[in-house]
Length: 592
Image (cartoon, rainbow, N blue to C red; front, side):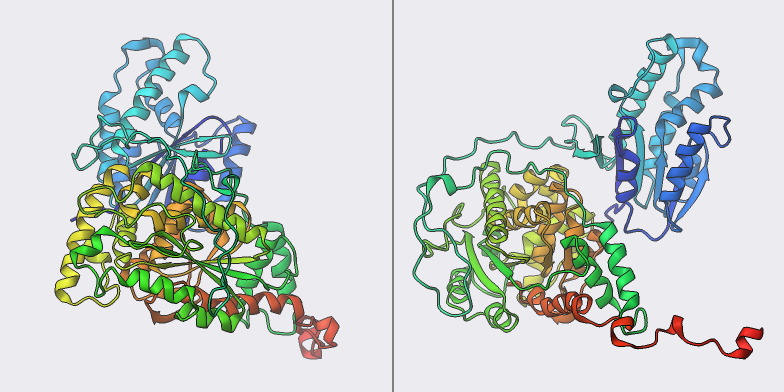
């Protein structure tokens, strides 16, 4: 049975934001034990104020347990997610317990550290541990200070070996650290280091710029792209900090909802979607959504030659032509709601029109069962392409984006990504995709198993993960979604393939998921797991599994209506309608 718990060590300096980041990693859980290792009582007013600030930030899901025996506390409830804050205070208590400050370097806490790591490995639920990175904290150059620094470094290293993931927080910025190539994970398997970055390829001669395609036949190709417009893949995986949607505007929008001519909450989730749009736009009421755009990322996958799909690989190129000419389902749906559609050939195993293949990285990805889907250099190029496409659509006036996909066999790499990032078993997450029979389902399950085994060694390196098992189309999608968040533009996610790319996008640009809403729930089992991972609730549930962006496009009118409610619906005061709070109080009620 595959261990599903994720153990994360979050390191950082004083006031770096490490505790807040650790809390964010457990946001999807409904029950969390907060294991506080600081002093229970203290006369230090400043320390007490800090503790109170942390407590106020935690909601009712948290149960606070103040303890210095972390090993026992973890063993007491291995099935309940836990947040340990912090290891430095625990270490101080252990040194105190053996009067270690006076004994200097002779203190031996190896047994305590080993017991802690063993209890950590035995956890069946997610656990996050907060600790100071000794090089980022002020430690006095005294014998006691040097003792604490040496022991905390030893403790951090030991705990890191017992964890699946180690993150460093500096000035609020989060960096996921690569695996130690000489380390063994908690299953005993050797963890390999991420491949060394490859040199980015020199861009080929530029071709036509992809332009948004309105439903119907495509016009003549747009003018040839200049060299300056070809995206530079250098550091394409590096994103600036993501600014979240405005909480102040969200509060204002919720207050406005209370004044509209309806009972509070009577429009259900539609009200909260309107609040989200307001927060994304930074204004209340929001502006109407009038220029939505759909970008469909197309690519073939080598794994499709292994019989994991009900359709042959050549269908990808045929469907790209169909979307380009306006004949696909996404075109019909987009025409109804006034959205433009463009299709981008990232790795179709055929020659497509120049205006579709501007950003093409290669013909087909490799077979993820046995080798990397694409190289790191190709992954950077695809990521840069996705970012550039988002920029072009936003700069041209798009006020909401939708990502779609087209590629025979693409639910296999998508499911591999979801399984790797959520540590699920292949048989638990595999679906029927385009409708494979039982034998096809078994072949697909085996392919996902093999892909997840290869993905495991790079699961903490988003770019290497995309290169190993994602392919050019999913990589470009991840870049597109992360860049939209960086540009503060709301996105409606589609099905399992797009949501898989979104999971990696949120790893590349932490916090990006707050700019997304899930359009629908696919029948693919992995999709719900991915939605849970991103803490997203779908707008629609219509048992769809087409892809192309179709489910997101169908959800678009709901999102537009949610904005329109805040914009155009009359308030009680404007309509002269009596609010329930303004209703006359009966005399009997007054006298009571």
